[in-house]
Amino acid sequence: DAEITQSPRHKITETGRQVTLACHQTWNHNNMFWYRQDLGHGLRLIHYSYGVHDTNKGEVSDGYSVSRSNTEDLPLTLESAASSQTSVYFCASSVGPSREQYFGPGTRLTVT
Amino acid sequence: RKEVEQDPGPFNVPEGATVAFNCTYSNSASQSFFWYRQDCRKEPKLLMSVYSSGNEDGRFTAQLNRASQYISLLIRDSKLSDSATYLCVVILNTGGFKTIFGAGTRLFVKA
Image (tube, rainbow over the protein chains, first blue to last red):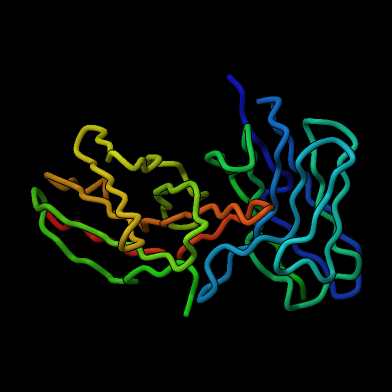
């Protein structure tokens, strides 16, 4: 069955380190998204991509970057992790930009 | 004013009850509408899309009112397993697409 996976599921890192969170989908969806979810804020969009080599900033993109070298993967990189980036990160994909999104299981990141 | 607003609840209802949630949106360029459910510490899962004509899936009914700019979700015959947070999602089309999540409505169904 097609699916969307994220790794690692849990990560503890230190302030200032570079961290990359992986997202892989087998639906062949062109559109992929990264969100973070924090208490009191709900889901907030970090970056998104509408296809290979396309990336766009969301509402909370500072300190994060993405690259899209193929259809299946959209890794999220924290250039220099900060304690404010402690959060749960969800990746999602959709067949079209106005269509329903399907979410991965999430990565719980703690920055100490 | 938030672009998408939901009553955070919590809604506490007994098994078998009917419960309704509303979600209001502020931008008339809103194009697509969805309800998701999210269990504690899990990912959001699509519950249903919301169409202008309204749609039903088993015990769940979704309605869209474009004139008043709100969508609703009705759950009939509530089950314990319906306990979750329900997220309203709106996708705007203002030249580019923008997905906006409501903060969610918490539902507790009690035996």
